[in-house]
Amino acid sequence: MISQKQFEETLKSLESHPGVRGVIITSNDGLPISSTTNLSMEMRENVSALVASLVGRAKAVVTELNEGDLNFFTLDTSQGEILVAPENDYVLIVLREKNK
Image (cartoon, rainbow, N blue to C red; front, side, top):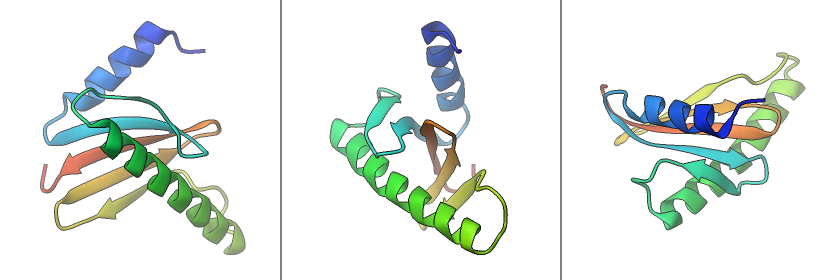
């Protein structure tokens, strides 16, 4: 199990990469567990809920296509990228500016 200190250091490390606007860790139910401090509570809650819902749908597609397990996906938007890494008990979300 990862310690709280290691957890916080990992968040800070991800946030320090060029172009990263924020990092969110959410439950599979879409409830924010932790995030970097530069995101508003409203943003954390919206992103968490919407991405968790999308993860559920993406897992269903992968299962239906017999493609194994969903490991990672990227949403490429006009404003940047949303990097999503679903795990067993949580989802890691990184919001990143375009072209970084």
